[in-house]
Length: 532
Image 1 (cartoon, rainbow, N blue to C red):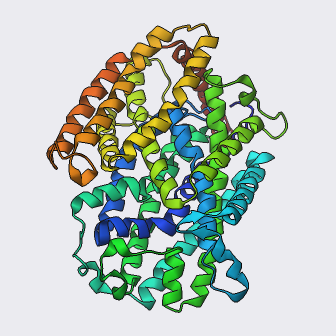
Image 2: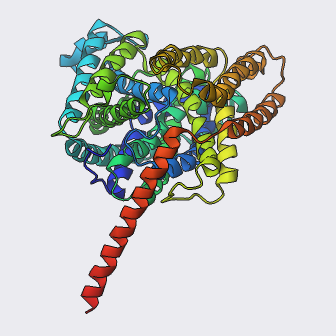
């Protein structure tokens, strides 16, 4: 997106990534993970980090090669990202519903049984409009606002960790109520996929989708992506430890699965009489989700821009405002879709599960694309070349496949249906282009359709520990997933070919290489002058 201002450095991009990762996930993720896996939820965060890192490395090479805003532009990826915007608004309202003050009793009617009421929907709608307006005028405003919010979002979790560890830490919680993994180790894996862990780490994509505004994509993207993931992991693991230790032992007598909170960390702070933390947490329940909502409002508009440039959407969605440098029509479209998600799925838990599975499906394309371009795009200029990608990419594909399976049947099948909604739109624009190149494109992408149907079948007949019919027993099921994943990975690589878009990309990359060489030459001249 050449019209956007390229002025974001490594630190700014890392703040974008960290600001996206630390959203409502930290307010609810530790509670949901503990509900599913008990104290072993700590391991779930570490497993989630490993899965995401392998996938993120593939995307980092892609993002540096194609510094176009909206670099990750698959339909599933857009669904996963755009649905995050309403879930952040829902998170703020859900925390708001448990305000303990006398004057705020009216907020108790905002949520019923974890679902937003009409009043709650009205407030969440207002928040979506605020996210939209903060991105409407300029990239610079977004960048400045996000950096300030991200600093706040790092400080508050830190204060929460310290306060809970100091005020009421019960070490016995880690071994009581069924032990470390009361629901079995399969639940630890399910927590990775459905408790909000994948959902939380999904923010690593934001620096990649904002690569069009990066000063030096080859250097800044991988540092921003990997750095934000590692910093967020430390924060999330410490939050999980603090949460498990702060729960009153009487609350888990019947098991961790019976642990219910409307506002998890705020409810713990109230129980421990940490009044200052209660106020801070209720304030941060707006700041953290809103920071992520603002970030994703910006990045999703660039994804729509990218899809329009690939001829998947109407031309109007690719227009960039000549003064402010933002794709406003794309922003309006995303706002409309956010409203649909908000009114269809009114609870944080439901939205987080759907987003996680849709995200996992979208992750599958990254390792495949990166390695396919190593074969078909040998002439492409690569500012960043990941060492060992021929090992990292297939492992990333296997890990994403396993995590998708861990999400449990029937959730996997339900989200697959949402993803397939994009097919009619794709066929419509193929028809408009008179099916030009459709046969070749279909042959190159049919593996994905077969793969998803195969994964859905294995999920259905797989282990009962993951919601299946138990025809394939626990342990054997994951071995089968790994073998199937490798088969489809090989099929996908074999199906890759040099498209017209790739030929154009090679030309663009050559221009990038020439421009970078000119910049390096200019720097050398400056150094020579300084020496003289």
